[in-house]
Image (cartoon, rainbow, N blue to C red; front, side, top):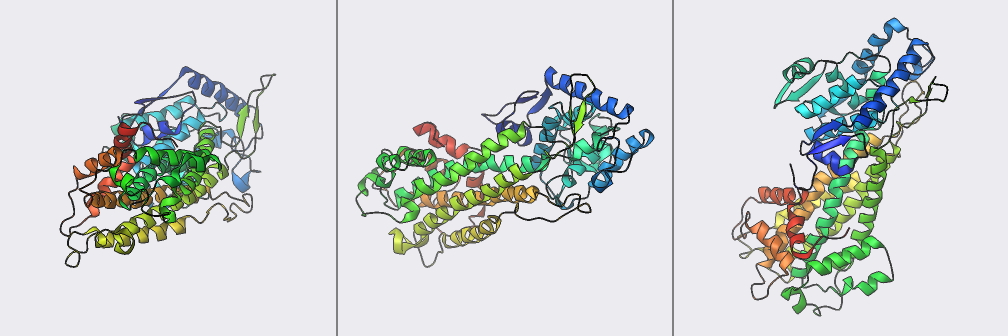
Length: 513
């Protein structure tokens, strides 16, 4: 288990985004508390009561969508719920990766455990067992307006259909379950609807993206400080007095981080008065990094609520007379997580655009006062010329992804769903956004380490030297041209898994967000 993450996540109490990452990325075990089991069991009794009494409740005794006015008889309900799953497993294209699917499975189990969906304990137990056994369904990544489609592919494996990976092998759903010793679920009233409704996929992808966006934002403080050091920048733009008269907390935290990271730098101290002021990509780090961090922090707060909500439709509530009631509404709408995801794309793209400008300055001899493209033998060697091209291309992708998806609308279901959130598309691009943005910050760190080697007469800060040592243990000084692709990948992995921040914080203490 990765350091800093739980090895066991208990459902039945509030969970955090770090719990999602622990299960999805690092394989933490999922267990149910007794409170979880009691809530699910009590609510299920009400759904069975509604079914027996033939109450007209959506998805329990009626059809779905525009078929809300069609009665489903007691004899047809098991077949109806199975059909719900099979018909909704309609996504297309390449599959989502393992951590995305595992995050969806966890959040689905978490949402259903609120005690308002009316699903059977046996059904959520099947999902829990699949997670713990390492079964993850093949879920095509395209074709959701905010819910339903991609979730259908998870549910189809639960009933022995579809496809899933188990121990590295792609199998049909029934075989995958059998190899793990899990029996397929036979769905009863409302269960098919509960498994495909809600904000499962939007919340899952947005949660993973937000978690990594936070890491990228702190890593941008590190890469930015390293660039400022080797570009002979001043820390006077980070002065606490400047921050105090524009008191955004994330701005002040960024400035404090950069001051801490560059403390005791002989390079920075020597050049502190070298210019009257630096270019904006150096001077304005507290302001832009701070603004991006605020958007990320707000998104994390919203997702924390979404993780611990009940998002089914209908939702089932007890009443004083014991009869219970099912209320039709739309907590299944993906606008909260979707708009967070759109905002994350803007925040991360802004962080990356400033990083790209700083890394360009390091390889641009006209402003860096360093060898051209950080090559000790320019002309014969290209140095890091083309790595900057790569980041320019990535920035093109990030700018496209910064356009919001949730303002779009395409009515579905014969106008019964005349508005849809499009939150899934927002979450899908947010996840991709952090996947590619990490390479910009990784490249900035690679360049800064190379630049440090041209300052042999003066020592860098202990924190930036720690990053240098981490990188140089794997990546030697670029003397002659070589393929740097794997080097950038290695640094990007060190950013995402926390190794890079860990070596900095070992020197200066915890960085503030």
